[in-house]
Length: 113
Length: 113
Image 1: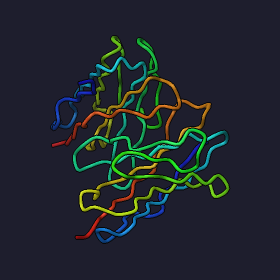
Image 2 (image 1 turned 135 degrees about the horizontal axis):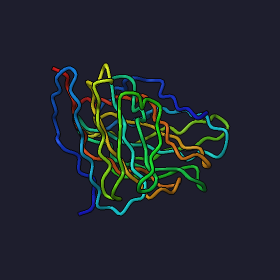
Image 3 (image 1 turned 180 degrees about the horizontal axis):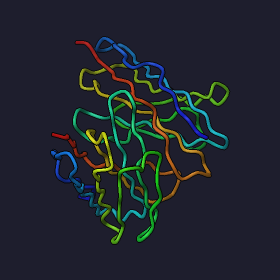
Image 4 (image 1 turned 135 degrees about the vertical axis):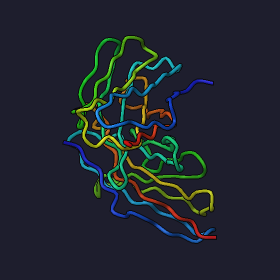
């Protein structure tokens, strides 16, 4: 079945450490997105990519970085510059057409220890 | 700028009763509107969308939503609630000419047996 796979499901980060969250899709979707979810704040866009080798900052990109070297993959790195990284991170994709909804992965819960 | 509001943090309804989860939006162009559902520690699942046409849109699991242009609303409804409908519901909007999707803060639906 086609879908989006996020790994790991749970991740623990020490202060000052960079961590990378994986997102892989086999839907042949052009566009991919990273969202951060905090209680009571809904989903906030971190980065998005509409095509391979190109990506754009979202609303809260500071302290995060991404790459899009392959159509199927859109990893997110949470750097030590992100002061409050504890959150639930969601990856999504779609065809790139504005009338289509998103397909979401099952998320990664990141906790700073 | 586009925005979406979900005025209720939580909605409680008795099993078998009709349910409504409210959503209002603001866009400069034609709105593309979406509803998603999220179960605990999971990603979001697409329920339904309004792009154009009939104001009453039918979606997955017996849900429907009514688009009201004059009131800029897109309320989610279901004639008879199930306990299994208990989850977090997100409304989302995209301006037809704008790539990014804006999500509401979510409404927790609790269906009481």
